[in-house]
Length: 173
Image (tube, rainbow, N blue to C red; front, side):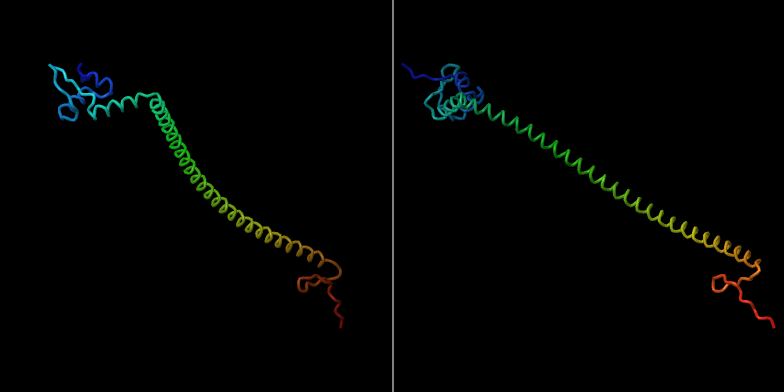
């Protein structure tokens, strides 16, 4: 009885490798095979073939498939998280730009209000001096009227050092 051999198509199906890849390995003499008519008979005891079959069995096992699915799921989650991080970073940069802009506007508003406050203080100072000057002039006019009225009285008045006092009677000689 002849030992079991694999055809190129069978080995490709069992291992998940391509037919062209297996034919290339045969042509490069990396695996043992003999030509039977137009087909190849591949020796299953060849260490490379055994390695391919073992790897294919491991990959097809339920545990490996479950782990592969879990890895795929984690990669998708990681990609989603990376996207959310990029979005959060973009939002943070936008907020920082807006903060800088608001700080600049606030500084300008403060400067403008300070300048306006100084201008208002200068105007108040000028107006208060005008009012004081007008009041002093009015007081002087009123005082002169009072002095004029007092001058028309029987007792003459004398203005001494800013004060109005009755004149002393001069002795008649």
